Image (cartoon, rainbow, N blue to C red; front, side, top):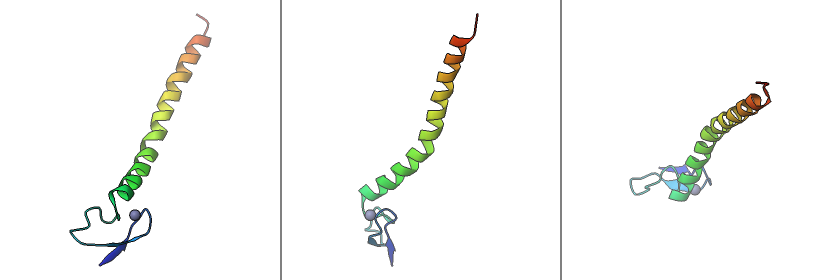
Length: 64
Ligand SMILES: [Zn+2]
């Protein structure tokens, strides 16, 4: 049985010797996981940071 590597579309033999299946290599596996992780974490992390920043700015602008 053969599958295509999700990252580079290279044909991968689906067997127990293919350690990184369905990826052709560790590199492709990490690329795929890295893209998934950056998509999942970058947006909420950024928005929290922006929220804190704008909160600080609001407090500074508020008349005491
Ligand atoms: Zn690959």
